[in-house]
Image 1 (cartoon, one colour):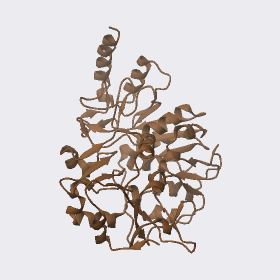
Image 2: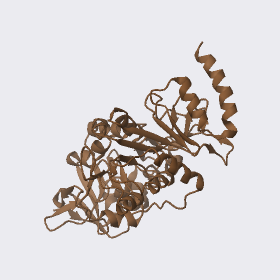
Image 3: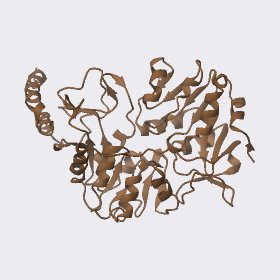
Image 4: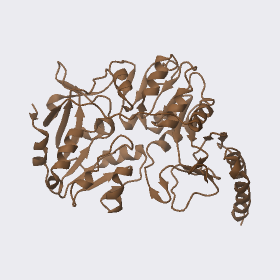
Length: 426
């Protein structure tokens, strides 16, 4: 049986040289992180590893002590200071690559995770978030779990024996929420433009945020949609309740929604808690390209920051500053490219800085990274329309992208493309 401890006792388990994995998304054990933040000396020389999701996870474990370090796969605002100080070991990996990294990693000295309370059979559900826990749990040396009475036990979420836990901190706290908020008209227009590409019976993958919310909100008149992706959100719940999404036409996992986590507000937490048609899977399944390729009529939908006229997309940097990571974008894009009648969509507003900057650009900005290569890209959508780049020549791509740029930038983009095209020809 695990030993029940207070959160403040966790500091006694740490020592310099240990590697500590921390679960992310809504599975982040916030009570454990807070205790370590207050016991700064306990993190001296500790190396944390975590896939912290922007917008949900805001704990900078590297900031707990001057000699603490963190391996991370996104660089969100909360990690920026430690990243600038060289305390963040940022790995620019796709989610499939993170899976491989976790599988090759030496056993974690300590795993910090969150589970639901044990059931009558002594089993604890992983709840609404799997993260990479299934890949590392078996070999972890010490497992410390926040057993949160507020974490649901969905029928389709894996369970682990309560006895597998070495230490338990019992809590009863609300899960972190990420409300969508109001949708600007530009975002709503983008949502409608993307929705026009989605047919009855398609299986969608979508992220969290205003653009995904606008897209999902425009799909309530569809029927027999499916879901395979990283997350279920409030808007996914709305689609199911509207009769638009039931998974009945999926070529694999028929009649089931597949996701790695439920994220949003209490609305989706409560909705997902008792459903038996949601299956929670680890990233080694949700982001597995060969598996995604088996999903017929799959539509991958993601946001990006800028796209150049050859079709390269940057989803990670602004002005050369790292603000995110590649995440699962390319895994889903490549799975869609390989699938039967499948598509991928990158959505963005045509301008930034209140219309002063075009986000359709001749070449990616200085210091930008290529998050999605031009060889993989399919649709690009702005409020001015949709451009399909798949199987298009460089000239056809440029023409299509200029057509969905803000009209006030189109002449300049045409001029710069002509100059760029001359350089390409030598």
